[in-house]
Image (cartoon, rainbow, N blue to C red; front, side, top):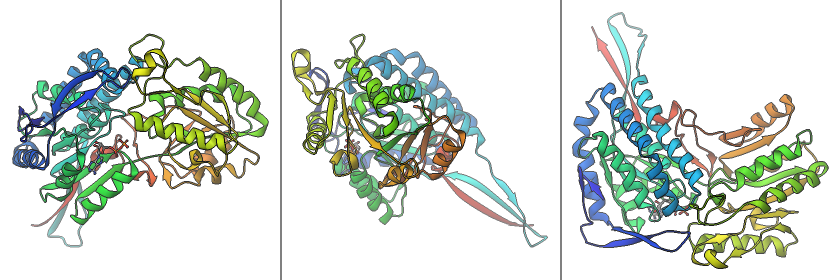
Length: 475
Ligand code: ADP
């Protein structure tokens, strides 16, 4: 753990082990913090706030820029570590490290774009000034699926704004968090400004983060169930809250689209990170007129995907995070199969040979998926592409919107009018139009409804870490 500028053990001396999800091998033992460690981290962040918030935007920008340089220099080592600890194939890990670094350089620049306003007064002897101030100490809780970029997406804007920070990473990926912190430390972050508490049991840390009056803001990325609980506690203490939660993304192919192109897009997108992404497409709506061509290409592509240890050349799909994740995917597939879905590709756990020591599920296509199947409603977080055949393009936007989630949606069409009507009609925060990667550090990321509150990245990303202060000056 990293508290007040020092690498420390937990106060209780307790530790926990980190495993490679592809091989089951133990990678390391890390400190398991408890409420006392969380409080010590907040002490440090709170004490450091006055000095850090008084630095100039140029100084904070330089720290982030230097962090970007160091992360970029170390990108191969970070990617190797990520593949070992989290499982995604090396190529995907390299892409994530680049994405993670992008947040550092984006917010290095945004730090210098925080400005204020002169505003008019009714009185000739009065002047109004409105400025932005950092909110204070930020508590961050991050997930395992993107174990470096989900940290920089929060740390970049927090540091740029002049906030100090305490962070608890997911218990599956503390080593990526440690390596990310080393980047900032080597870039020269002052003591106490960023603090890291690793823990096997997250609940006591969450309790401290959401109840300590010195914490001004909670930023969380993870499941809707946990985010809802934490946001409730934070709200009771009037902390600011941003939570980036689950999704259930529709992927709509309109009748005028090229079904082969759309199927290639779906196959590429769905199996990224073995489907363990909140923006992963979970419902593929394909018109009856295109379904043969679409399914043929999708199945051919998925059939060719190689599943295994992400360090092996040619592997496109890595392991799932743990046994519970495999069991959830298996239950959804069995439920769909039992209710009449076709399973032309995959559909089973992979347990033979090297697969036996990790958590693997075969890349799967389900056809004939209907509303009464669990997979139609529940987020999967696994390598399963459920295809739903629809008849009426006028109804498909309503079908897509029929979910409590509202994070990402995807649309395939060659008609600009159809594209624009879909963009306007879909109640989702991020919409890809013929585009399987509508994300970037430079644009807002976040969802509606049960997918959360607030936006990360883009110009709005730093706003989440700023308060507005109004000055009335009688002159
Ligand atoms: P997932 O199901 O994807 O693992 P979680 O929401 O359980 O998603 O985990 C996301 C983050 O939330 C992780 O850092 C995890 O440790 C943390 N977390 C889980 N439960 C709690 C809790 N009760 N209090 C605080 N943090 C929690």
